[in-house]
Length: 299
Image 1 (cartoon, rainbow, N blue to C red):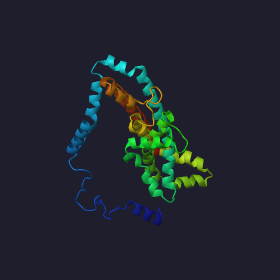
Image 2: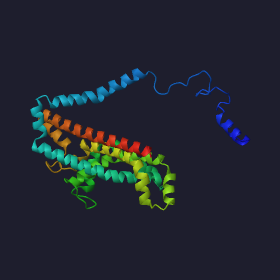
Image 3: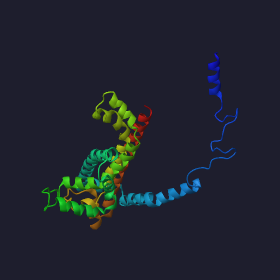
Image 4: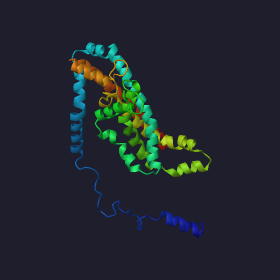
């Protein structure tokens, strides 16, 4: 072995601390352990969280499920298999899927523009994305009715149509997709895109082969939240939807009608069905998103 090689090997074997046989503590202070991060009192904090979730989420869900079965499983099946209930659930799922599909495309595009482009008024547009979260949904329905109702100033009448319901649901669910995709785009390494472009890939290929696989888990997450919100939406469609049974009536409107006509068990049964649909969709999309994220991380 030459002198140069021995010198390189010696430098590689030299401890990072400069003292043979000793390691510098991670905290930088000998004999002291780095303080644990996070909230103090792990078991107490966990118990508080579980108690709060039980009060806010689990107990109300259990109460609804118990109420739906108060007259027996037969009454539950009769309520959810009633022709009007089935038609309403079908319409609800259809318009929710349509609104989610629209927001998957437009929400991703809006997030892309907000992250990658600079234009006057960008801050205002970015703030407007969260407006459906703060605006009372009944106000959104009133605005949409004024814009697309019988006396539409733009000449487009969507009142009492499925298209009007889809527009209302797309309005209230848009932020879910945008805010799910936007942080991932911000953290995305653009050097990979530049490398793909330098190899001759056009913009469409770069987006489909480089960007989209990274964004897909967040898109699925935002889509699941948007779909679940659309399933239970009421305020934004109450005016523009028309509440036509079998056509524009959605599940939340039927539930309200059943409560007003003293049918609480039927209303609870349909509520349980909506909860089950939302849970299954969220679970499937979450599992699919996690698998895609792990697969992308292994590349």
